[in-house]
Amino acid sequence: MINRLVLENLKHRRLRTLLSALSIGFQVTMILTVVGISRGMLEDSVTRARGVGADVWIKPPGASAISLSGASMPVKILDYFRKQPHVTQAAGTLVIPIGGISTVTGIQLDEFTALSGKFKFVAGGPFQSPDDLIIDDWYAEQSKKKVGDSVSILNHNYRVSGIVEAGKLARLFVPLDTLQNLTGNTGKISQAYLKLDDPENTGAVIAALKQNLDDYTILSIEEFVSMFNVNNIPGLQAFIYVIIGLSIIIGFLVVGLTMYTSVLERTREIGILKALGASPPDILSIIVRETLLLALGGWLAGLALSYAAHATINGLIRANLQSVIVVDWWPIALLIAVVASLLGAVYPGLRAARQDAIEALAYE
Amino acid sequence: MNSAPAIIQAQNLTKIYHVGEVDVPALRGVSLTVPRGEFLAIVGPSGSGKSTLFHILGGLASPTAGTVNIDGEDLTQLTDSDRTNLRRRKVGFVFQKYNLLPTLSAIDNIRIAQHFGRNREALSPDFHSLLKELGIHHRLHHKPRAMSGGEQQRVAIARALVNNPAILLADEPTGNLDTENSEIVLHLLRDLNQKIGQTILMITHNPEAAAYAHRTVHMRDGKIVD
Image (cartoon, rainbow over all chains, first blue to last red):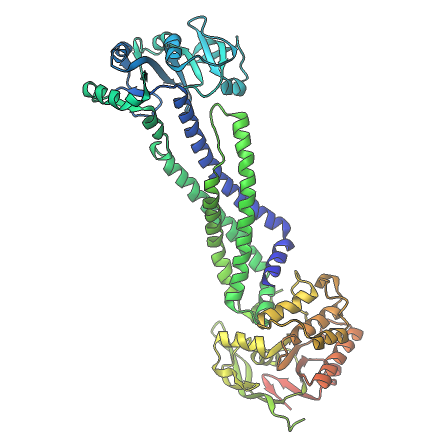
């Protein structure tokens, strides 16, 4: 019977109920989207790192493992790597940030494809000239570029020579020499990839390399990709906490305001319920149930909205931001929505529960 | 009637409201005995204390001094939760403004009173015939806004009786009704009193309404004057 009353109360003010649930929905979407993008981007990085097909990844001293750029090492070090037992191929790349989290990657095409296998071209083909650019299909789609188009990167104009399938190392590839010369890194690379005769030898090769290069970061590819998690991105975990905190505050305020106006508006009805024998806990339970229903409705709306956000992000800006649906965060988002809503309902609920019946009945 | 045991016994009831720093006496020593099965009208001008008496007898307020006993229960010693229990079991209210819950249908208004009365049984055949007598059995699934004032008040009477209260407290039950509907409601109250022996206390300022009762007490300035 109480559930009937709760439902009818929510139906009675449909617009208010809808707007409150939507606000909670946006709160839920905000969390799911931030987590979805964080994870999507990390997963994309992992895919691209694995896509190289290397066994060992090397970065010079003084550079953090997953930062966009870092200290450089001489190209000649690749010859040293190639001479090591079990190493069949070595390739160097120069990664230069081009604003935000985007980068351009310089490669020696022959050297790189020898290690990684040929690029799968969707259109066009390899570099024809030093000012050529290979882009992946996500970037092409997003920036509406096709073969022959010109793209300006770091104030230098490149011509798109080919479009490749996404999932290998980077989105923008330019000839290594060109990028080295344009950025004052002549003769230098920022990381190296090694291919071994047998992946079983990875541990032994790394151990041997570390004896002479103990300041270098030398990781197996699996170790390398395992570093792409939320905890290893500086500030990301904190950012997610901030978003969760903000959404709890928003949920608290929205539900607090909704339930407060609802309780005020129903002062007289609360008086009636008390005259009928409703105890303060009975009244509180009505408010709590309404709040829980709002939170649940908001959560469902939030799930739907998060799919919309996911589709929009991946449809429009997949080259910059990648989003995934984070099902494991659905219960967490529900918990956050419920906690925020219940916090918001505390004051209105207690106010209603303590409402004096005679005053309430006299309320116009 | 006077030989029946008293269902309400109030002795020297005083109620003082504190308004700012001023004490406003609403009741100044009211004593009242109501035998079981009586239909009593309490008449008085506004400010005479009749609403305060109504609230105390209904367990909505406690007296400042004096004793009151309803159906064997001493209200003076009751805590808030005891008074909630009293409202559930012993008292049914009928208000001037009907006070139905606007979001619930007529039958749900009755069922929610049953719910708070911790009365889990299905509505009895006797109650169904009462609904017929009240003339609302065919209107039970309508919401209050789709009902006339007279119909709403009859639903309110049904709601007040669903838990078989010891006393029915009616505060100006015809105050918002036209003459025809007033007469219907007053007849119904008298019939309920006669047929099922329901004890009824009715507050009114209308002498014609009071004439339906067995007995009328007059209040003025917080006292019973005759």
